[in-house]
Image 1 (cartoon, rainbow, N blue to C red):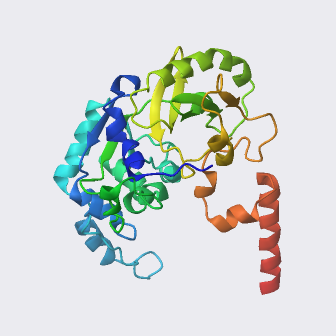
Image 2: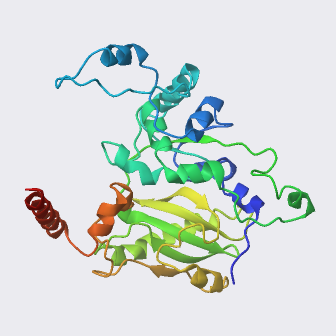
Image 3: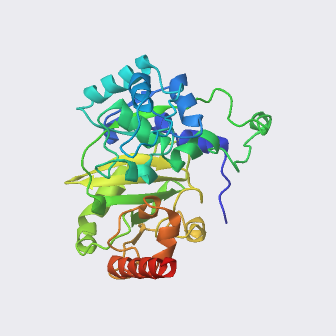
Amino acid sequence: MATKVTKKHILNCQFSNWYSLFRTLSPKARVIKPIPASILRYLNEDGIYIKDVSNTIEDLTDEEDGNGEEQEDIHVSSYYPDKPTIQLIDRIISELDGAVVPKLNWSSPKDALWMMPTGTMKCTSAEDVLLLLKSSDFIAHDLDYAFDDCIEEDAQEADLTNQKFPSEFSHELILKEWFPIHSSTEFRCFIKGKNLVAICQRDDNYYDFLEDDMKEFLPLLQDLASKLSEFPDPNFVFDAYVQKNRAWLIDINPFCARTDGLLFAWTELYAMDSEAEGPEIRLIPKGSMPSSGSANFYTNRVPFDLIAASQGENILEFAEKMQSLASESARDEA
């Protein structure tokens, strides 16, 4: 049976609420709350924006390109965050050893990695942070839809039904210290009735060493789960990263279908016995996933029509197909 989600549960899962409880279990981070108004306005505006470089643009638009055609107009946004905000972000980045991973209350911009030259969420400047946030659909969800489909827990919450956000809510910008993570040892863990009932790997690729290594990882994940007993809700989902002899708390998510169950269907999770002895563990079996060997969110990195056209083909087959289509088109035009 599906667990109904309250606004209170969603609020409990926002970063600033759980990080204050479990700071020692998680990598270093800084919370900017409320998020500066200039950043919020920038993220909510449609379109693509760049900071004010009007002098350079004026020089460019007064000239013609090498073909004698005028340059296209470049529109500079007046909504780029103000200088004090940029300086604040850069200062925090410096305090966190020069690189951070950004997120809002609940989500990180993992779907926007294609915007970064490194293909990671590593940000070394305020410009990097803003670029990732602006390019992410996950971040847009935090801004506009975080409380969609929530039920009201009591009469006081029922009065807020028609409000987009609960009273006293504010968006927050989190800058987490960046460090290299081996995705093979990232896990999603499911807590039900205060008990750890399920664990699965987060990366959707097969790793031949994981089955044996889980004998060492399981006690670390169980120990971390036991330290999260102060979390106010009996059901929740947490992400962990195992490094050497320690499991780090990376994130906490709502126990509901809006959180990706990964290798578990939510019908299974809802039906699990919270009193079961030991968690059910699922890893990617060898050769069973069609996306094996690909990066997470790879479909976000190129236009959807190309992804759709390439389904079921490896890169060589896809390239040959596209070359053949291009040759046919050239012959038709001739």
